[in-house]
Image (tube, rainbow, N blue to C red):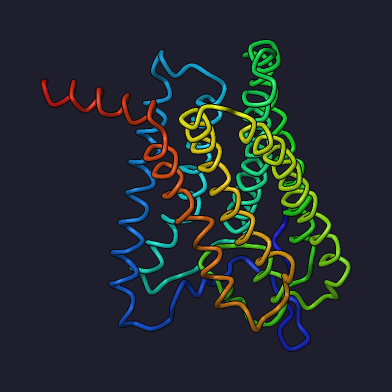
Length: 316
C-alpha cells in the first residue's frame, strides 16, 4: 500500500508518517501512565499465559477450554500490538509512527478484534449445546467442529480487516499528521482526512453491525436458551455451577460490546475523542487483563489445575 499524499498550501507531498498524541499530553501524568500501563500489560501476559498453560492440561481437553486458550492468545496479541508502541511513546519525545507501521497496526487491531467477536459467538454456541443439548454435545462439538469454528472466525476477521484497512488508507490525508489517539485506529484517522468520508462512515456502521451486533445477537439468543434450561434444573448446586460458567463469558461479551459500539458507531465525533481513548484503552488493555481473572477465579477446574501446577513448581 503506497503512502498517501498530504496536502500542504496547495502542494502535494508524500505522507510518510503520523504522530501519535498518546493517552495524555500532560507531562506530570507520564510516569503514572507508564507504571500503570506496564503493570496492566504484565498482568495481561502473565494471566493469559497461565490460562494457556492450564487449559493445555489433559483434564481440560474440552471445547470450552480450547476456545478459552484461543481467546487468551488473541488477548495477548491485541495487547502486544498496541501497548509496546504506547510505552515507547510515553518514554520518548518522538511519537511518530511510519505510514506502513500505521497500516500494519490498524490491520492487526481490526483483525484481532473481529476474530475475537466471532470466537465469542462460537463460545456461546458451545455453552448452548453443552447446557441445552448435552446428549449431542460430543458429536456436535467435535475436535473438527471446534477447529472449523476457530478457522472460520480467523477468516472472517481477515476479510473484515483487509476491507476496513484498505478503505481507510485510500482516503486522502491533509492538514496535521497528529493522530489524537495512542494507536492507529479508524475514528481518529477519519478526522485527518480531507475527503468526504460520509460514505465510509455509513460503511463502517454497517461493518460494526456485522462484526459486533450480529455475534452479540447470536450470543444473547444462546444465553436466552441457556437461562431457560438452567431454570428447569432441579439441583440448586447444578444451577449455580452452570450459571457461574456462563456468566463469566457474558461478562466479557458485555464489556467488549459496550466499548466497541461506543467507539465505532460515531467514528467522526471529535467531541468524544477523549472518551474514545478511555474506551479504546478498555478493549485493548483492560479487557485482555480481565479475561484470565474472570475465567480463572470463577472456574473451579482452572483454579485446581493452576494450584496443582504452582504446588509442583514450589516443590522443585
